[in-house]
Amino acid sequence: MGGGDTQIDPIISRLVAEDKVPWYQKRNLRMLYLLMFPTCIGIEMTSGFDSSMMNGLQAVNSWESFFHNPNSTTLGLMSSLYSLGSIASLPIVPFITDRLGRRMAIIFGSIIMLIGAILQMAAQDFAMFVIARFLLGFGIPFAIVAASSMIGELSYPKERARIGSLFNASWFIGAIVAAGVTLGTFSMQSTWGWRIPSALQMCPSLLQIIFIWFLPESPRWLISKGRGEEAYAVLTKYHAEGDVNSPFVKAEYAEIEATLELELENAKSGWRQMMGTPGMRKRVLICSFLGLATQWSGNGLTSYFLSKILDNVGIHDNKVKNEINLAMTCWGFVNATVLALTVPKMKRRTVFLVCTVSLTLIFTGWTIASARYAIDGDQASSRAVIAFIFLYSPAYNCGFNALTYAFLVELFPFHARAKGIAVFQLWSRAAGFFNQFVNPIGIANAGWKYYISYCVWLLFEVVFVYLVFPETSGRSLEELAFLFEDKIQEQQQQRVEREMEEDSTPVVPGHNSIDKDKEDNASHIETVSK
Image (tube, rainbow, N blue to C red; front, top):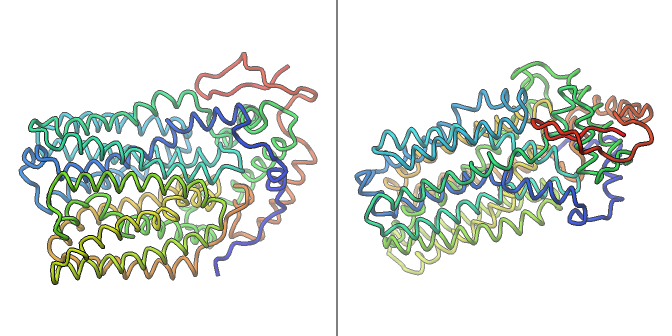
């Protein structure tokens, strides 16, 4: 039950445990994390801004009138084209990410999103608006897959899960900005009431295009391309503060190199590798489930259709709706950030169980309160629905927000990581497309009864997590590379030990610093020299 608990000799884990110096006292590591925020972590701001903006625009009078008060089907199409665009791009996302590198994939996706945001701001009719939303959705997977991989592969092992959790928490920064802007523009009579929020959606992509040039490439990607010296320089600079003779960096490099070699020997080419072994099939099953769970746990209702939910419990004033949207988003940011800083210290499987059980109980209460209001118009039930919506936020964030990408990076080995996260995105976007198209129709036609389907699904989530999820906390990415392949783990241990004994790291003996005079503009890597 859970499975995957065998591990190799935890060389890296032991060395990390012995390191008592916090990240903020390490100059280079501190700079690395600061650069990650506007580039990698800021990418989720785009998703947060989009969903919160679409929530807010439904309560902006000029948007409603310009698009002729879109009905449930039209509104669903406007929202779902974002997910459809993502689905269309996913088959080529791993190719760009693995072939050109994590940084180029982020740039590629950000440029497409920038074009989409410009078209959305300038939209003259319904067709132009939905094409813009398709482009926004088409670009976001390139950035998300590459950024989540880069965070896991660049971060110091001690902070890897925490930084990965903050990646998802940054969703709320974009959501807060969008909620605040739509609250400020909802009463504007001109079309700038909705064009201003659309224009601001360009900001995260601009930040990524500017700051990505200051961020180094993933050392694991560099090693996979035969650029070991550059990879060692990155590890030395950011994981050992420039000490090329650091035992930790030598062990880390040896473990990465040996594991990548073993992965390539045991991997099949292309997409076939995703179903080639029982271990890979289990990984695909788990990430597919996560893709569905992160969208079908009820969050799609509050992320895109809060206005319609509030209508169903007697709240019709647009100003009040936007105030609730802003308050809920701010609350989400607070609890998501706190949970991102604390939850990664806990067992992954335990946290996911707490998350799914809590969501099942809260959504059941939400459904009952909505039913009570629909039957007798009880104002106490209306207030209870709002309370459950606010309780829902930390319950969802503790697992599906704080751990999803950190867990996915740990679940997949390097050679399949981009494809694995792309599979997750495929199921997530497909579920999002279904939800965004069906939710407004379901809410309009079935009211509170529509929520019952979510209660049933949430109960299934509890059972699935309990029976299938492995435990991945407390280990390096290389230790987790063969999580479900016990026999290969034994070979991995032997090969890592041999690499350590041979000391094949690309370092000139006796030197202890990185020469910063020679820098490659494309890869931002210092070379090792006298």
